[in-house]
Image (cartoon, rainbow, N blue to C red):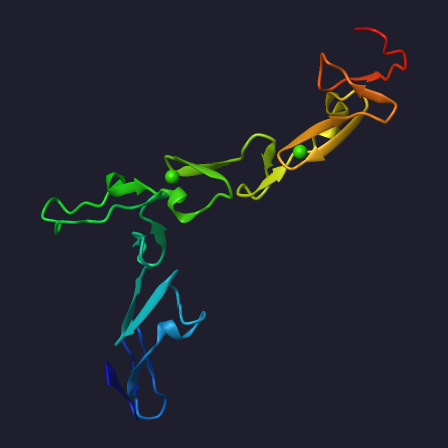
Length: 190
Ligand SMILES: [Ca+2]
Ligand SMILES: [Ca+2]
């Protein structure tokens, strides 16, 4: 019971913040603020109910904001908290200086080759391949789609490259592997 006041012929009770009043006997009961909103209550990430109150906390890598409810990432995207090897005996201030770049290349992010960058990474592909939209996989370039690959006659696409070919009536030019010359029946030269 909390704060009951006698009134003429009756009495009136009130409960402190965080408690709700049970109608009949005037007992106050804790309100479980965390029971709603998918067990999150008013918290962004984690909610802990207590008698007459509640408290929010955040998952690993996040810090509780000044409002006591929201969480924000300790480090900017692409960075992670530096593992603290010795126990912190300094000022104890967690600032961005404690964030280190994530080496995404250690996680096999790329089909071919990975370049780690501060705060990000980039996948690259071998010659003759282009990076797909997913940023990870490499796709063969069909060189024949662009100006027939520069071939004078036939263009044959291959994985990682292409080749030029000549129709039966032609032979490859000795000057360029992309060019075909008509076969000459008069082979008297030489
Ligand atoms: Ca990185
Ligand atoms: Ca190709």
